[in-house]
Length: 567
Image 1 (tube, rainbow, N blue to C red):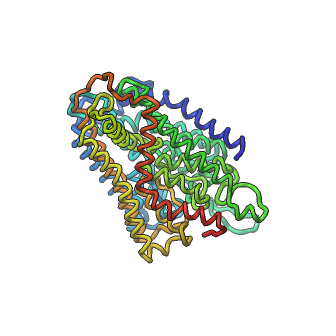
Image 2: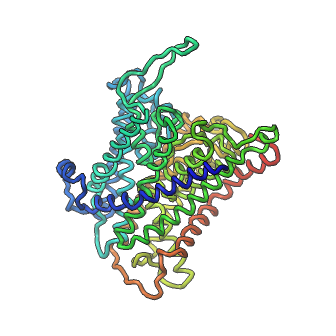
Image 3: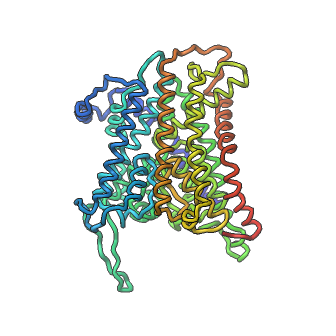
């Protein structure tokens, strides 16, 4: 570990904190229908979209109607994206003449982008046409991110409102998020990325002659616009197969730093939106503090493990940390930080190959995802995920002191606890059951690149990444097979929608409750004690659930490395 590396990490954390209040304040105004500096331009478009949808910003929905609208919208998006891939060969804007995508892969990709996962069992530049990249993948990058934020806002309304039957309007939340938040920020980011050297063109691929006289085809396309939303919307799907390690997606250290900031920006800002909407910004800072504790702990362990490297390599007289699978442009610190950021959020973009991390260094991304990606998390998804843990935390606190659990004046009763546990437990259900089946299925085992505990980690990482809607991969698993395409696709759908519906049910239940004034016996949920309790509950639930799997994967691999054995 170096001083330069720590400076990069501290600078990242400092700038991120400075962005929280401006972004939070702006999103608060957007989702409460208040005037913003973009209102004169966008209000006519906003109202026109409402007329097309047959709704208005004055209409609100019961939580069940909100959920039905959301599910139908996502089903339509899934079907359109699947059709675009299957008809790709006959559609325009296909200069490389790419054929139709195979059905299993098309199902996997449609499920992936609709769920904001962006798991990719294909090379983008060699599989998807410009039309599919823009009208299919990029569109879903926007609307899947907007869907996640809409759910978070609906759940916040559940805590903020009293004795109400509605939690907002899905169409209004989706429209405002896309028009006022995602599109403007992405336009600015796209221009910045083009300035830094990322391509943005509809021209054909370029043929070049190398110094050796060989012919090389250089893939181009509308890259900058997709990079902008893939990071800001925590989508993570790369235009190129190498993702953020490709120089056309991530040209230098400046672009790398900006991309890491945009992954966390909106998720961190939502904590401030929460504080503003419930009338106590300290509540939002308390949640961000809990996220920050887990994030910093992960960065420290991952950076330490990668900087320490492999003792077997040191024994050969080679000094330095583990540079295998890392870009020399970024180095160990920026690669370790990127790995933790992208898996603490449900982004999945990578600038280094996680399969080549040390056992403990690779374990941190796994743990981040297994905790439900509540450490900032995906846009919206991370926030409503941590609110599920808050429900459990205040329930535990109530049991300890013998009082009815409450949070922000709302009584937390059996229904809310059951729904929260359902949302939390559906993730390990998908992650562990599919992994257990895969490790005994010969066709699934044949896809791993390594034997022993590392091969097990590759399988576990794949299903963990899918269910957590992350989309990153260890890069040691050949996932483009019928088994993995179908099961990972199912896993992604479970990880998204089996969490969303219980979260909206909680929102509806809480919105209908009266707010109880705080008393002398009320447990303060904006205190250091509550932050510690919340962090403890997250770690205990994750530890009890996943420690056995981690023990036979990265932990035993680390012990084997110490004993001189590699896989």
